[in-house]
Image 1 (cartoon, rainbow, N blue to C red):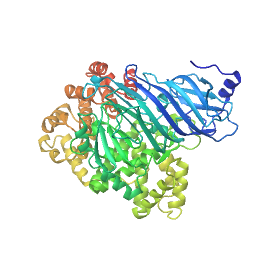
Image 2 (cartoon, rainbow, N blue to C red):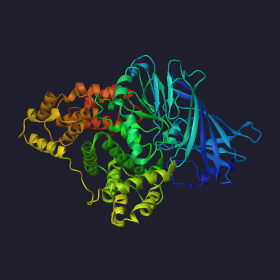
Image 3 (cartoon, rainbow, N blue to C red):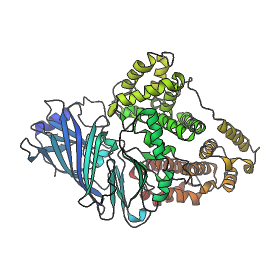
Image 4 (cartoon, rainbow, N blue to C red):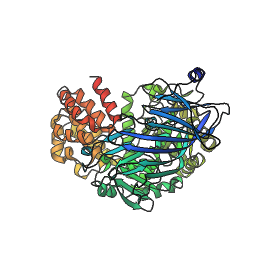
Length: 613
């Protein structure tokens, strides 16, 4: 039950002006910051809730402050306690603000003094935005339930009352009670030998931002891959996962050779059920991965390289607010290419880079100009003009590749490593990076990038005309075949597809989307079995082009959409089906069956697509 607070407290809370830079958080981290978090929770699969308490250790910056403001969303707050000087826990008054559809509710705790520790007793809602509770029949074995979290961007507040902003970093520990027969893993130290007796215990000694707080509970096995790497997965998937992740230790070695030591001790991964909405989530010590990257031939290992790269760009040096997301994702996309090149060669890396550039250029037609800039100047008061979430990956990487190409790797690599070293375990802004860039690279080498071009890369829409475009010789050969094939000059049987690697097929399919006929798509399917491809990147692109061309792929597409929940695939496919008059009704029927298999994040995105019809 929420306690009533004094009128003066309510008035003070309502009139308080946020003097911080993250408009997506209620937290007054200019006054007080969380330095450590302890979670003591019980997982109740019957009611689909986590219940217990969160204990926050605080560092008071403003010595006159007497209010602690935390972010929450759909949390049921039972009581709040503070630790007194005599070591006793006593009740504290609190209130919850009116619900904001995007940000949730501010939890405002009135304090007579500045306690070092505060406890919030609460339970989550079954509809918590970060958590997906899966029934046994939705798992591979069909025997036991499964639950996992996805906290990024601002969904951590739906399962813990915290300062939910990347500007605040904290260490954490936890004790989680779960039903017998289920393993709990978190983005922290995971004891492979633990049985969960007395609760599953975790400790994260490196400070992280809230969006990297992660948990998964289910029927999970583990396989070690190397001295500091392991993969976790459902029993029926563990062997395939262990094979697919077999190069992970080599990836760490490659990244360390470029950007310095890996500072998180272990790099473990968990392959989640198919409903996981993203390709991967870089939760430190326990990267969350989609099973869609399991192709049987390690051809989609760039996803692993990308999540590993976040161990430097994102996890180690974090965007100070979501205004600066390009500093997480653009940097990571660049680092990924460098890791891939070390492991698989320059030819492969160049193809990957060209695919990214082409997708970036193609996306400009659908992204408002105001959201095409990597960064915006001025206060972070309007999240609606933050850079597009998909464009920042390739555009940010393209910017860094440009600096590298002009400076030379012997200059640029030490520069970038220095950025990671000097800002380790800190949150940073675009302005901070620009200052570092000027002082440590451009002041000594002004010819690398003039000030006007730097501004164009960061603050202007589109891609600068000065940007160098990659031109892979292997892709040029694919281009020639595709052009002739689309014109009907080259029979499908004469395409060199049996010798193409996954990236060549992706490049081919990207550029026939909306151009090929139904008959051509049928011939492709018959000649190369694309509708049954074990590579989900290829299968997705084939289904998308087929729907747009009018080629009937209902049977394999239904299996795909019933078993894959990755938002990157699911949302465009439903949009394409809805845009095809012959498929619209079928899409509605299919989504009715499939919706419960998707994570809430994916459900929201697809629901929006259907509401527009």
